[in-house]
Amino acid sequence: MRVHSSAARISGSPAVQRAVGRARQAARDTAAKLPRPAEQKVSLKATDFTGVRTTGLLLDGDEASLARKAARRLGLARTLDDTSAWAAFGAVAALLRVVDDGNRRSVVVDTAGPRSVFSRWVTKIGFAPVAVDVMRPEVVGDAIDAGSVDLVVRLHPHSSDPLTVDEDLARGTAALRRGGLIMITLRLGPREAGGVAVADLRSLIARADEQGLSLVGDIPLEEGRQANVVAAGESGNFGLALLTFRRR
Image 1 (cartoon, one colour):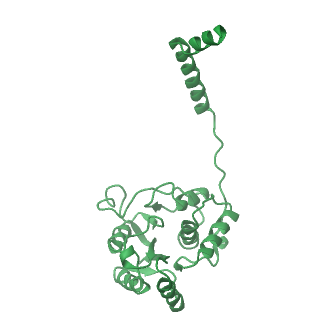
Image 2: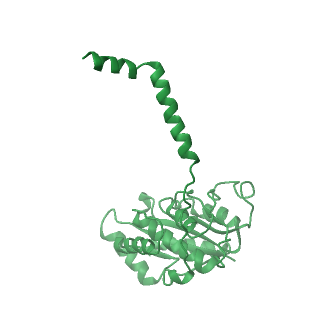
């Protein structure tokens, strides 16, 4: 018993605790100085995203799951969020097929921040996305120059609010060069739940066109009918709309 009591007194003494603390800090400092392996980039081409829609409606969880699995097969970072994967996959397709010239020099702004699925994926393929919310007042012209951006995204789970989506598009477009893209997602569903109907989307597309934004892709009539059926079929059902606009 005396041995155990002495050991307890020694280990609990201030001198020993200070020594242990110094040793732990030295270990942390050494670890911080060690070179870390650079994250391996993935070489992808526009043809890797042939057939991926840049405008469309997500009405089926299986479709979102397939998008996430396809991204993983291409070597993009893992995610457990199927819906975010579906939206980000369409945005990456737009970036590679429409915006980028193959040199990975396009200026990309992600309003959701650097840890979004989209930002992680485009970083993996060689871009350097900027995390700044150009859809907030006075950001364009202050934090970022007007007309200097190739692509702006606001994607699920940080979708645009139906009440402010026109302002989001106007402010985000101010950052775009001519020919640049702006991509947003909107929740489909009842208005009281923060969603929009297909008719609301078509109205938004018409208003955006009047402001110099052309829709890239389309929402077929049959897809719109299916969305209305899904929304009306069961309470609580909702989907997601991905819209891509090009600044004229």
